[in-house]
Length: 612
Image 1 (tube, rainbow, N blue to C red):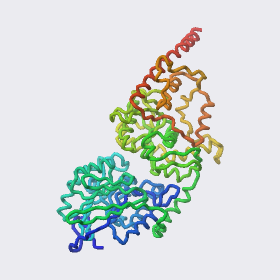
Image 2 (spheres, helix red, strand yellow):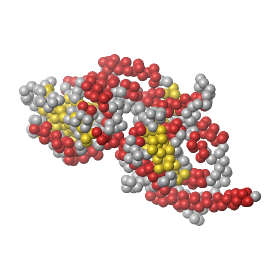
Image 3 (cartoon, rainbow, N blue to C red):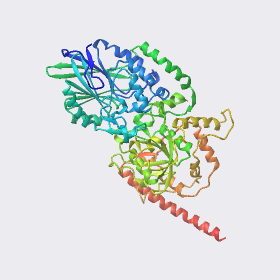
Image 4 (cartoon, helix red, strand yellow):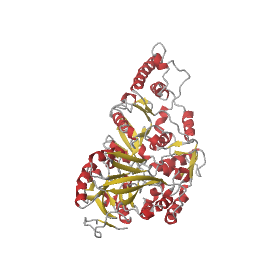
């Protein structure tokens, strides 16, 4: 192989210009997280991946990686991505761009990784104001002479990174629009003699498409960030995204035809037909031994399957999201809990049965500090609105919730998808001026993912005082053992299984159930069988506006229920149409009228008692 590269200072290092080969091969992959094989989750691991790559060694491919390796994964939670340095070096990468998850453990850690890897990392459009260099000590661009082809490479991220990266101060980063930066760098690369320009991108697909529409001088776009295998064609150009998690990669054959270049793409799926690479297995054995002892510890037992698929947690209420948020709320004694769906990882349905440490770390691989803040009803509605603002993108900002119920219309304009008059907190319609106790992540409290309503809220319990989210879940299982008398020490000191502040809403209702909607008054409502079947508006309203005696047995019963890991989808979040919203408002009005009429005899009885 004849190759040379441009050095960090911009000077060109290489041999005399060689004849341009008529055909070259590129091997591309992106977004890899779990290095070990996990057959039950159909994850083949890095060892088989390297063997599959070796099948194409005779074609001497240029290996390009489009970001996201250091996190999240169970192993990286303990190693801060150290195992990935070893793996990426063994894979023979020639150039990579940063992904957003490269920053999960902070700049110092990333810069150490940059130094330890044997290939350059690029990030062209973000500059650290403290150093006046590309963020994370990346390179702005890279030039490599590959078999006579002088190839220029740039690496591009998107503005949404800065909204989401908890370890980065966005005020100290100069962000340049990826289109503008690409159009600035392409002429520079052409002036340096590049005859082929590749953009390594870590963008969502709509942003890739915008880049393709607005930068005609880039020859090929090799992307990441999205986890599906995608070939996008616009204006005779190609953006390729090569899957995720060592499950697949792409072989691109570039053929020089007169003055043009044709691109053929072959998708390679990695499976058990590829034997594990011994060198990778040996390199990872140390990390696996360290983890194995801890990962198999059984925390508890799941009585039902837990839905942690990205397509679920980023689009709808899930039983796993309910469980985690319930734990957050109970552990901190708050009125409600909000958790951005991007925190929940694993992208799988967790089977019924033993729930182990490794299951918890798969679901919550990142260190997630919690915080309790004081928030107004208006802020709650704004937060829910932001959570569904990018609903059609399966965004990580979609919220899993506890203590709050709401409906939304995903087809309504952004900013008006959540009807504020139908939002309920602690089984009561929210008062926009009232203040509530909210548990969320420090990540959201800082205003990440456009949750701009949080940073100015009063902090009631800061991140130093609040437990980590994974710790809350582990403590929940310990509390179950204590409640069931299985702990070594008999004690009443344990994390709450049932929210203390919620006990005033554990209501004892009588057996009388009024005819809510007489057919003569509202016949079309009597047969409504859509989202309202799950929306407990009337029953909840009757309970929350009436005064009932708190029953201790009800608290104990709920705690017994909480001892079983069997969360359900309750109707906390409902996707509805405008017509359903209209009918819910009618329900609310009629229910309020009923409760007022019900209160009149009670008020008369109380007045008589007072007179006596």
